[in-house]
Image (cartoon, rainbow, N blue to C red; front, side, top):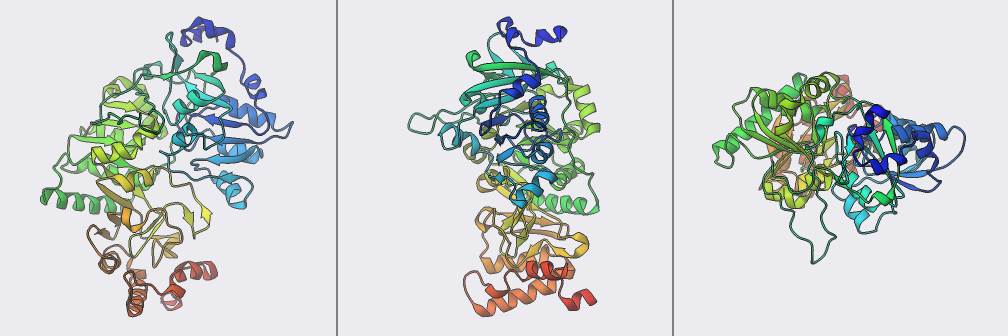
Length: 505
């Protein structure tokens, strides 16, 4: 450990160095913890894992606030240990998902730009301990984050106590990568967030902190968990082609140039694969203003397509992590990491005029999108930042494969079983079958376009029949209310959304 003391450049803090176990012993039943981490990157690791060990000997529960999902199986282990009372604002772990849906602990699904505001306004419980991962602590009092910023700055500012995990497995070269800016409290004295271009820096290179609140510093050596994305397949390639076709039409109409507009792409394999499809396109000098910088962003940088990328975290596959972090000097001047309330802030998104690409679980014939709940009740991961971007982007695009579970599920249904993004916030929907540009269309026009362009052929007749019957009922947005969820109820009863006649065929 002594050889790593240079990472804590303020020697007055050296007396605060403790073990993860000692830091975990300070956590009491009922406390609220603010953990660093955003989509498996830059998450606090050692102290949460020590809490799991402690839970084997005693019973306690805490609230866990993060930026988004965390890695190192922490959500899984915390769930299994029975430690969690309430979790927010996002998670992506199968074990935690099971416990949430069983009601074993509470989950608050929030827009990712909202959590910091709710803490700042005193709406959420006070954070008792901020536990944040860092590369180092500067002499002048800055915590230098690692591969994400998330909500760490807000946790550090507003927590009663701070524990800093100095992760020596993370690159010291990350110093200078971050741009930390916290808005003033809401009210008359709040100034505009002065981000007017993707690469503009408006804050500090680290998180300022009150040294008197630092209760402990823990040295760790854990790499980030690799992302779980899978490579593009034939269907995601087709989706990318349809998206490119839409963008070419926008260029042809004079609404975009070959530089397009700053791009945001949500977390996950589908959005990553669709963005990857731009590598062989004519579009160039691209900029990314997003939450998560995934493999595809670095592939586009390597291909000379992306000039600059702003995000909240860097989340990569094993192979890409080795390449990027092993040659980080090639990327440093093309990147900046910000707090999530800045990457996801409606003011900035609207100002920059983003093209937003996010993944849907399902959408309906009128363009309402479900991003979170399987069959209306079972939480998947959470809304994440998709709502922040969809409501405020220049063009809000949602992508999904048209069928799932071997064709037993149609991703386009008469009426979504849970609404995360209303038809008012959805501009374009894309499947491997095609795309539907919904802008300026009335509900009846949207339904016809979606059914003809986006629905899988095996479900097209079913949805067309539903729409014809709905039209006979009349209304601005025609529905057959007693059949609006017939696809979902049929799946629950028979294991497929297909009509019996179609299944037999």
